[in-house]
Length: 234
Image 1 (cartoon, rainbow, N blue to C red):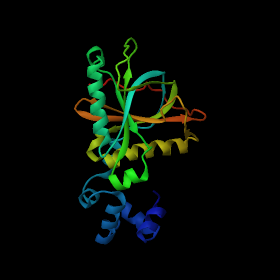
Image 2 (cartoon, rainbow, N blue to C red):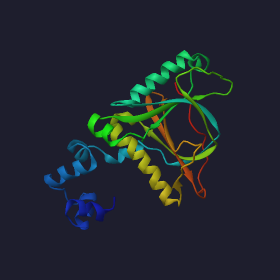
Image 3 (cartoon, rainbow, N blue to C red):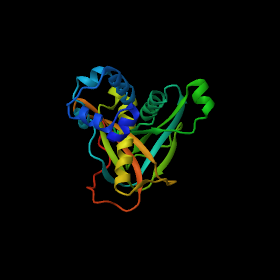
C-alpha cells in the first residue's frame, strides 16, 4: 500500500502519512483505531511492537522446480475442513502402511473452492483438500482416497514462520507476497490440468512451525535461485 492509498483510506494527506512514518508526528487516537481495523491488528501491536519484525515471518519468494510426484488425497467440506481432512489422511496413512514404511512422508494441503454460496453462507461450510506424497518404492491400493500424479512444474514459493499464530493474516499474506513477486517479474499464476495450482506444506524448523506456500507459475523464468521443493516433516 502506498502513502497515497493509505492517505485516501484515512482521509488525510500523503504528507501526513509521511510524517507519521518518520515519527515526526503521532497519529491521533481515532486514526490509530482506523489503522487497526484496516491492518487487522491490535492497538498495542500498532503503537508498541516493532512492525518491522514482520519481515522475519516471511522468506524471500523463490522459484522452485519440482519433479513429478504421486499423491493420495481426499477432500472434505465442513465448518473446519483443515482439521477434519488432515485427521482423515493421517488415519489413512497409518492404515495403508505409509507411516510405518516412511515416517517422514509429506502431507500437503490446499483450499477446495467448489463450495456453493448456500453452503458457505447458510451453513458456514468451507472446503479443503489434503494429500500425502507417495515416496518412490511405496505401492498401495488402500481405499478411501484418490490417487493422482502431479507433473513436473515450476512453482513460486515462500516460507512462513509460525503461520498459525495469526493464520487468517499470515497465510493469505504469503499468497499476496507471491502474487506481488509474479507481477514484478512479469509472470502469472498458471492453471494446468495435471499440476496442482497451489498447495501448502507444514513442517518443523527446530522448535518453530513453518509453512511453505507454493503457486504454480508460467511465463519466462526470471533470474532466480532454483531451490528444491519441500523438506522432510518431523
